[in-house]
Image (tube, rainbow, N blue to C red):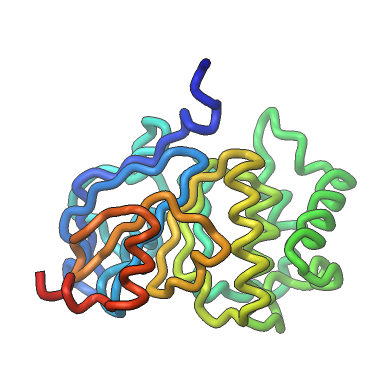
Length: 253
């Protein structure tokens, strides 16, 4: 049997080193995420988790000093952030920003405006937005509001999932998406991500220091990041261990 199409997608990080604020934070990180897989990066505060996420997406203020990040063989580090998004990498921010005066539908239409992609057509795009909003429990009224303006933290995270569902990229990076979510919102977000891994083979790299995200979102691989180094890699049982023991043993290694 041929390998499923989604499994052919590959996000490969090799020897990645990155700095923020003039200081190197990530010290040579390696991992691979295939389509349909959920990888979780866990670690204590200050371990470099968000810097890792920002380095992958090319967020301003984070500088990659060495290494390679490829998506299906395309070197992302040579691309601007918007080009990385076009290549198929989606970043869900820990604190999604407001964009006054720009509506969600306009943002999605621009993101989908590329040759051969007809998903940006008005009626079709509106239908897709409403369907994704219903799937994540996002009030349809917010679809017509300027992006994230006057939305709560939980509503903004649901909004990110609406965008993910419309764009359907091969990979997404979640920068502590569980931060600030109540139990209901966290469950809705995690279930939508779990569905996406099956629906279109979404590959997920979830950055967090909480085990609670994994109650609903099945992890295939868990990486422990401490002081900018991946110090351990294992299955979902590793996250359960950390829930009970914390990071003390790894921080001392």
